[in-house]
Image 1 (cartoon, one colour):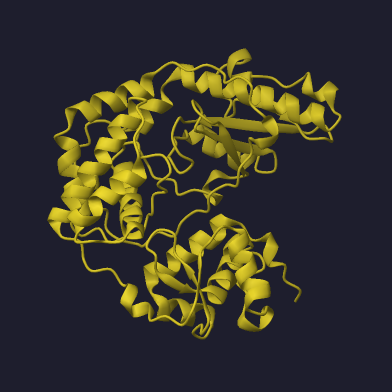
Image 2: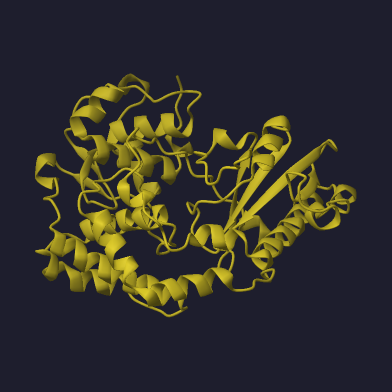
Length: 383
């Protein structure tokens, strides 16, 4: 089959690289039926690990186009003109040499090292929540000698693991560190939980950040607003970790979801976007009929904004807004989940993120559980 590697997105390659690191080289190559690379390796941006470039692209294709499946070795050629060019175009670093990938495996982090990097991470998070500037790269350089000369890539990857733990605890994470759901939990979750519990100033800063009033951003280029939706990550079927069962002082994401000022600003912003979208493609009459139904008809409909397709069919839009990253969890009601199933062909969930600083959104069409894991948050008890 004819394959155009230029259609691959960076997020799909990152997902394949994460899987490579998570399950190991041998298991990854067996799973996707590739032999070992001899010339070109792509470097994982977080760990610095050298990964077989052609196998990674083959796996990434299946992640981005699940209906087509992963590419096999015979489906495309490797080398400079294909694999290397596609990876460099997406901003990845290539290693043009035969490498011993076993030498890249990380030694285990000690408790002392975990304590140092978690403390540094939480200091940056406190500054970010307070609107203060800080230098991630300089802090990483300062940590290297304290962490037995670990690589900068190793530090960056560990910061992403800390983001994952914080989100599971209901705390916001640092901007730019994508949480990785599958990682070695030994030692890290305990250290994060302990330090968060004893950092009252972080609790106060997070509460103030999610409670702040919001208004509709100005001077936004709507043409650059839409982004690629994240892929639902595979979850290992494990017992829920003990730290997640312990009482968490606050769930800041739930608290943010109750910020009516932020929610309404996000909904009005999407009303403006939908009007712009329809006008841009020549449907000004439909643009004039876009309605903020959460305001005009009240909550409980299962969606917030009534817009339209080009053939006049209704587009039911539920808006979820956060000031944090794209992977920040959001809350949906049972009514919204049911409505999305019933109106799967016309339901769209717009996830607005970075709303206060650099608004972007991605779109989830149809039943919500197709795209996300739905975890029960509360139960109604009756007699």
